[in-house]
Image 1 (cartoon, rainbow, N blue to C red):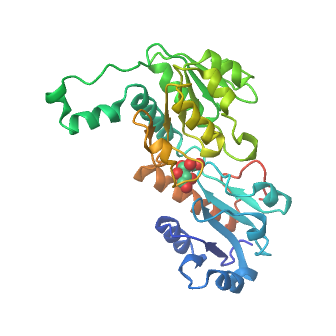
Image 2 (cartoon, helix red, strand yellow; image 1 turned 45 degrees about the horizontal axis):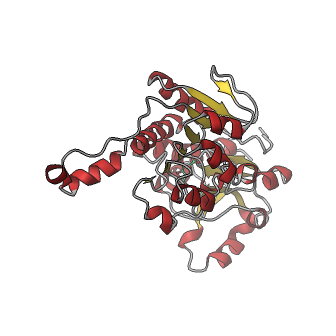
Length: 322
Ligand code: 8YV
């Protein structure tokens, strides 16, 4: 209802979002700050009309959303919203929004950084220098090259396209796999195994969730082959992690660069012990500027909704009620 001072709940701290919502005159409830979170939620549930959600503060599933009978909108931080049951929301007339576009270039930059770091051993070479090995043992070993590689992008959405543009500029051939062909000049492979055979790098940037769980499995890794490199910028759930560890241990693929893991922030010990893989703590979008833009979009979706102007960036599963 426009003009109404609506009640919004958050389950974890996010100062920029908190400030923007409060400044807009909304009633913000900080569930994480309550000594008994469950009792607190029960006490505010009848009036809550919005959730500002961040992955890592727990999943927003049907059971949680059902606790708020007047819930109208869940505004989620991040372009990926696999921690939200958007289907449940859609079926119950609750809008879900995410934060697309504002992070495309940042995540694409990080993807290229991770790709180069992995192919050219940049972290290992730096460790070599810092350990004082250069004067003692001479030059760092020669490395594989991006020059002789075709990159197969898994998922040609907004970020996939930003990554492909960068590879184009670097004169690296691109092919891609997605359910439907996209409006791009690269070769589309409807069959992932076939693309894995043709490509030298698989760069994964497809949404997480049930539809893509373990999409990159032992068979795909086998098809990628012993010179192949896997880069995962998507979600840990998209890769069968035990199969990846097995493939790396048995040299079925050459290496991997991973920004995401199945059970974050836990990283399997087997991966930690591998000198030749590059591991990042989910930093794809994690710059001050991009995270601020994402925070602001989370708040602005809620502000716009309660100003009667509709959500700014609703996800396709949920109804748009303007
Ligand atoms: C965030 C992301 O780091 O947007 C996404 O989907 O994975 C990242 O930008 C993530 O949402 C952190 O919670």
